[in-house]
Image (tube, rainbow, N blue to C red; front, side):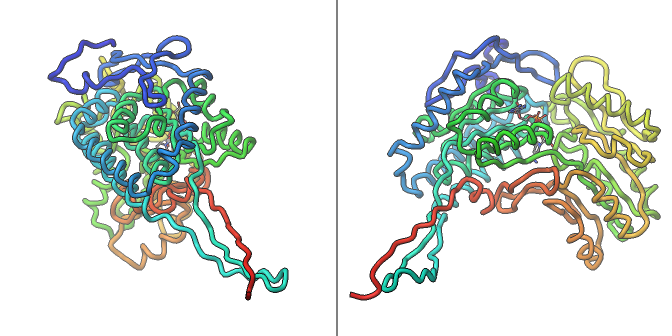
Length: 500
Ligand code: NAD
């Protein structure tokens, strides 16, 4: 371990450098260990193993074995529910350690780690626990006419899809791990989870807590390593039945192609470039705060970040000036400091990517009203940045930057607003800010996005399906829709004599 154990800092004591395969710590990887950073200081806090094909095979074997084992296969739904509820309790009991560990490794504000990674994580576990006992098929009224004198009783049987390869990004590491594991195990699947190489630490702790909760060994496995090595080997493994992926559209397409080759089930939660549409009848102060929250929350490292702002002429100047003021006043710093409003980017590489986009925006001729330069010194910081007057087709308006960078533009009519909002390859989220229900109701059906918020942005609930239109993905997480993604539907057809 690269940092001294300090028991006043529970997050340091919670660092694990092994993987969890078949219910046991697995200490052997393939090749060199990979450093894990604290992005607020730019220092190494741990090392992770890299699973190569051999370790991936062990993990998939363990998940298959657990899937077939009577202890899991024959477990009553209510017992799976109880395990998930116990895991939710353990996540809360270890909430301080998990939240601090997440902030240390990811850089996000501690309040976000507490409220979302831990708080919402426990909420999602409990919600999905409830589904374990509510999965049902249908009785089918069939009309099969042959042979004469025979009747049929037909019904569907939902069955777990099998071994799930879950691959998640670094922006909400614990929550995303839970978003995959909870519906998978609620339906009776088993899981091999690969966290992002930037943020493996809370996922490993979650797998340990799952064992403590009583999940049989092999039901929840966590392997670590880079996407192109560990992730690729997991996706290619012939004994994986389903791939549940959250990440970039680019990698999602790769995985989707490979899944189709092998006919693996696949769900893809991908990138976005979500519009924030502010109509001139809105509560302007609320809308300004809302637009700032939509883009600067989690440093803009959010798939539904409101990175394209469209404001109706008439209030445009006031809204954009207000947003630039907020951006300029935000305090950068460590997520562990309660005064911090903007934490670091996840990595030096990502910081460079975001700064490169800011340079591109300037070259493209957009006007930068706030932000831009990274602070000097340690940590991977980028100032919250507001661009306006970007030329048509500008890359900063079209490509996902995944940082605290918003591009503002003005529109005239509702038709213009719709055209602007839909002028993107993505379709993950959108928000409308207005107090006029008639206008809102006219706009909502015409926005091509998986979630539309009104007078709010980025609000999620375990009962609300979440996913993308267009290149933002395939499938829906949360709610009943998520359960369906982990089930196969078997039709059963039984013949019996019509009369004796
Ligand atoms: P990424 O696609 O680079 O990586 C995501 C995960 O895939 C990581 O675990 C990575 O190791 C793995 N991976 C990378 N290459 C792989 C390969 N060839 N085979 C298998 N696995 C591979 O994305 P990122 O930079 O970690 O995350 C940011 C992206 O995630 C953004 O585009 C963001 O919009 C998206 N995202 C989407 C959602 C959503 O729900 N739609 C949520 C969060 C993030």
